Length: 111
Image (tube, rainbow, N blue to C red):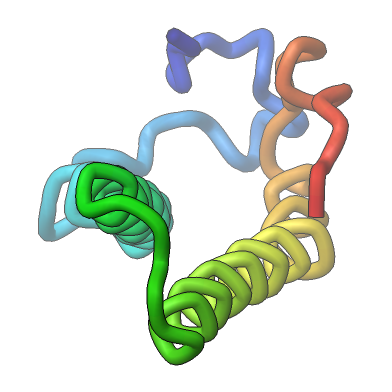
C-alpha cells in the first residue's frame, strides 16, 4: 500500500499531499475508485455466468454463445477505453502533481 501523504511522491511544494480532508466523501466513493470497482464487479459477473454455463453443460443454441461473446467483447472494450482515458488524460495530469512509485509506473498495459 502506498502512503499518499509521503512527501517522497511530491513533485512540487506548491502541491502538498494535503487535499484529502477537503473531499466531501471518502476515497472509496471517488469516481476513480468506483470505476475500478465497477470493472471488477462486471468481470466477477461474467465469471459467474461462465461458471453457471459450465455446470449446465455444452452450449446448445447459437444465440447463447453469441450473447456470451458479446458480453465479453463489451467488457474488453470498456476496459480498453478506461485504460486509454487513464493513459491519455489522468496519468499525465497526475504526473504534474505527484511522482509515481517505480513499481506502479513500469507496469505493462494489457489493453
